Length: 265
Image (cartoon, rainbow, N blue to C red; front, side, top):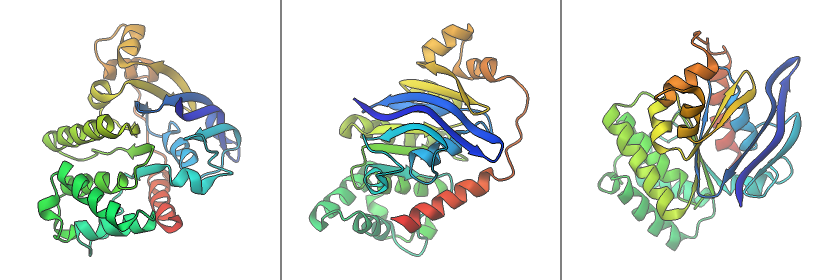
């Protein structure tokens, strides 16, 4: 059974086709990497998957629900960690978790159990009463991951979850995500520019470029297809070596996405 189904998914902004007839599926319990150069259409696709942007065409289901017609059901099926932090700095780690659980109507007894369990997994239980403004970047990321999993999402979206973190923290965060995936069967859909991460943790990969998916398969299959020795080399062989300038509005889109999501919960 599929956690995500996209068929001929498209999004136009005026004459610009940001996403052009994209089709892919993600199985329940899978760790799926969605890769592409800057401006390739990754952010636009994620926004459509998470109810924040209406498709111009095509069919889309998340956990069996239509993100356009069944927005609330989709939102309660998913968790999201954005590039930009959406934690409240003036609250403690535990208070951030409590607030999130209340927004999702997680019963108090279950909420307390989940908070203890998840903060323990990401090694923040001993910091549960510390204000988030005192946390390092890695600690914030770990807290956001724990918070995003509090309401038992079927699909967990991670947009550049380890951006700017040191190798040790990046490795630690992926260990947590993989453990939670194994333990709870949560589907993980993530973007990253660190190709070695996708190579190591993703069961399958889709590469999008200029709005179209140009390759799909396991990391091994993509390396064999391109006759390369690493996923990074395969990625470059498929998308080219030219430097891509990120669209001027891309960062603003992600900030807007984060604000809209917080406002809609």
